[in-house]
Length: 324
Image (tube, rainbow, N blue to C red):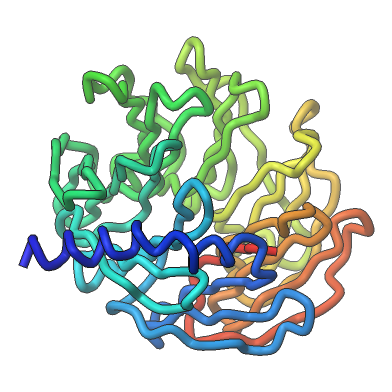
């Protein structure tokens, strides 16, 4: 079986001529947890191009370095599917342990680091051989995985343990366990790499960590009118200019815009139900917010700072990746 998986992966890696066409397809890819599909939308018309069948409960998605392959975590099948973006087909999969939740791929495309939520582990996987190189223990229910800008460290959130593990990529040693709020989820690094911002879903705020001292240096709290008790921040992204952070507030059905320098909330936008994850278009003119409670995506004009359209997708959408 392992050899068969490897052949699938090698086949995908060798299909260079066809995959080269995938760059800048103009498509949006949305994982739908309950449909076990990835919906492909035309980024201009927002019409459905295709629904790609995946493993069960697709959630996190990450690009290969050249964006010719899209990796989709099918957590209920304990695998990560590989979609050829030119063909819009699943061409193989890798198996980084049980119930892979969020994951990251190194800049050279060779290594995948996955959070194994049920086993309280982080798995380091060689993609080309589908070989598990190492597994390290984490806190309870690891989820968010993100590499530092220089690629030397990986930061992993542990939801129940309320902490961030900072792991050295060379030695796989844990450098720090940083206590944050309840149920830390997603994160980004500022453009200079000096700060790591992470959402705390249950506590309802963002923790800011200094990447040199590895200490919490600040917090961002939210108080949208009409939904103060429903704030459950999950998705977070840094704007193209590095000056504005965008945070989905979950059950509050809002997107918060935050000034990175002052750490003050600039405004709230009303989006769909249970705003969960988000991604920018390639030209950074549009921001797409995935609303898992209303099964749709909110399209936001970044310059105008307003929602201009809502597009239906599959059931319980989780993540979105833009290739436009």
